[in-house]
Amino acid sequence: MKVLVYGAGVLGSLYAIQLFEAGVDVTLVARGDRFALIQENGVLVAEGDDGLVRSVRVPVTDSPVGDWDLILVLVRTHQIGAVLETLTGITGDVLFLLNWAAGPGPLHEILGHDRVLLGFPNQGGVMDGDVVRYRPASRVTRLVSMPIGEPDGQTTPRLERIIEVFRNAGFVVKAEPQMDAWLRTHAAFEVPLSVAVHAAGGPDSLAGDRIAVRAMLQDMRQSLTAMPTPTVPGAFRLLHTLPEVLLIPVFRRFLRSSVASPLRTDSPAVSGELATLAEQLRSATHGRTAKRDS
Image (cartoon, rainbow, N blue to C red; front, side, top):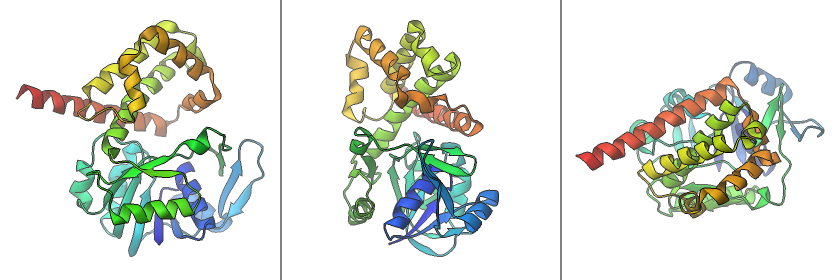
C-alpha cells in the first residue's frame, strides 16, 4: 500500500516512522523549515525525556502529487481547511485521524462521499526542539485501540485493508461503526476539560478546586446531552448516570496523575484547535435545537 502522511508534527512523524519501519511505502508531507530539517537529517525521534535520539530516514515531500492508496491526515482541527485544498489535487482514500466534531459533511463537500474515513490517533508525545519525544508504552496504553471507521458505519473491504496494514505495522486498531458519534463524544468531553485546566492554571490546580471540577463535570454533561449523536464509547454514559459525589473524586485523582500531564500544554496550536472544536460543538447543538423546534 502506498501511503501519504499529511502533517509532520508529533503524530504525523510517529505514524510515518512506525509504518516506514514496518516496510510500508510511506511518504511524509512537511513544510518550510520542518521539511528542510527532515530532508537533511531524517525524522529525529526519542523515547521519553532521556531516550537516545535517533534519525529515521522517512521519505519526505513538500509538494505531494499523484495517486495514493491511502492518505493519513494528522493535523490540528483548525488546520483542516488548508489541507483539504491540497487533497483535492491528489487521489486516494483519506483517513482523518484528529479531533473533529463537525461530522463528515464538511469533508464530503470537498472530497466527495467515497474518499473519506474517520478515526482518532492513539499515539502521543511532544516536540522537543527538532526532536519528537514519544511517551513510552505502558500496560494501559498498549490496550488502547485506535478507532477508525466509515462515516456510514459499514465494514467495507477498504476499511478491512487499512486495518490490516496498521496491525501489520504494530498498531492496536479496531473498526468503530459509530465513528462520528465517537469523535463528537470525545470533543464534548475534551473541550470542557481543557478549558477548565487552562482557567485553573494546570491540572494540579484544577484538582485542588472541588467547585471548579464540579462545574467542569456539569459542562461535560451539558455538552454530551446536546450532541445530535449517541454517547460513544458507552463508558462515557457514566458521566450522565453516576452521581457527582462519585465522579468528582475520580476526576480529581485523574487530574493529579501523570496521564493528565499533557493537558498542561498551552500553545497557540492547542488554543486554535480548542476554539475550533468548541465552535463545532456549538454548531451541532444549534443544529439539533433548530431541528427540534421546526
